[in-house]
Image (cartoon, rainbow, N blue to C red; front, side, top):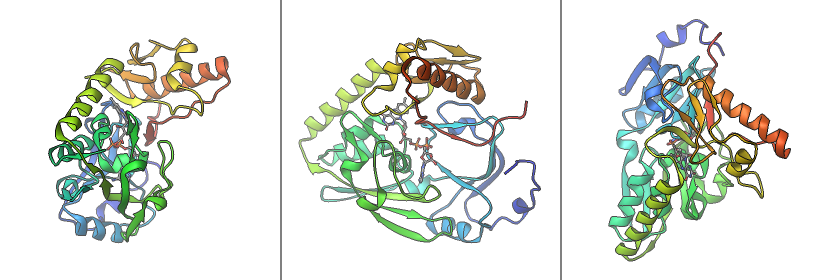
Length: 306
Ligand SMILES: Cc1cc2nc3c(=O)[nH]c(=O)nc-3n(C[C@H](O)[C@H](O)[C@H](O)COP(=O)(O)OP(=O)(O)OC[C@H]3O[C@@H](n4cnc5c(N)ncnc54)[C@H](O)[C@@H]3O)c2cc1C
């Protein structure tokens, strides 16, 4: 769908209590800090607001939900349709015994810290993932030996019509950085199970994760984390390194010297610089190892017209 089609649909948007912005720059909503505009950015006031909006929005208008954009490359030509961002009441966290229900907009780090304060062990890995619970469900996020698949009991989601669904762990179909839940469903919350543990041990594990991240990954940089999924039996970074791509650059984008499965925006990169660099890495890895690396970073929107 082209951004140049008529904007009639934007004049007849469902009325909402949340915030609607037109032609909203998306770069500030992503870790890479690049990319074009969303035709419409909608931040729902609450669940009823979101359900009403989805129920009334014509089905042909594409809807994309984002978290904090830590695994996202927004292309320079922008994103057709509506981008939805969940915050406010969508970030609530509640606890019953050793079970924690977190809204999709809650930061993984906040969930890990809440569990720590309550003496709930098993969710420490979430402190190593800089996204939200919604993004963690979509990506089956994992770090330092734990992943969503290990701790999720169930999740709530809305389909494109605004109908509510409760998904069991089996329904979520988790595998490595993947869920089989329909791509256009919007996760609302996850119920996660930990186990009672010693608060000091939990804190020590979270500190160890923080230290390991700082040693292994570039920090305080504009990146999308791991760019390519690890192919079965291989580490993506080793393949990238073996293909001679460590430090490779294109425009304002560079393959990190420190962790060569990370791409960096050095300051003035475009989304095209980053995507083209990633595709160049894929070509070189294919030449040297015969392996077809797959993007783990989600790329959305359209390329700018040249
Ligand atoms: C420095 C750095 C380190 C990282 N380390 C790790 C790591 O160790 N392990 C790991 O797994 N990941 C890691 N990541 C990647 C990223 O943090 C995870 O994939 C995270 O789960 C993405 O969450 P997000 O909220 O930022 O989602 P976004 O990047 O905003 O979106 C990612 C995908 O999730 C979808 N999505 C977001 N919210 C919802 C929702 N409510 N309902 C349905 N779909 C939704 C989006 O449509 C998109 O397809 C790292 C990223 C960075 C920048």
